[in-house]
Image (cartoon, rainbow, N blue to C red; front, side):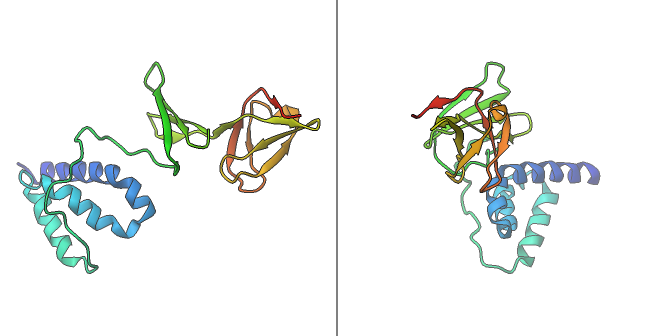
Length: 175
């Protein structure tokens, strides 16, 4: 095989490993080399260029770490781990066309995730009326925010944490 073809395969394997490990790397970027090594080492039998490159980098990496001795029990069907939501998920459903996943969490928050570009849409909250005034409770920081009627059905910022939420076009009465 040509040197260019070997490098192309290396880049493809590297891209897949980064994509699959992105949820770890986002929180702990210092684990980049150990994560990539542990994911890529199992692909080196048929890719000599990859094996040489991994061994070269392993010798240069100075921090202590644990290389895996056995292949991780992870499905090869894993395409990506969705990130951006830190709480537990209690319900999950795909849209009819398969382009989105709707998640429900333990706090009652609804999250819509686009499959195509892994975009997390703002939390959807239902505003409430109390003592004649209109409010919503931020799903991120739990702060109560006063709003006007023109905000119904719109995306708004929480005045406390500055995260975006989408307001339902309808309200509930608490009085």
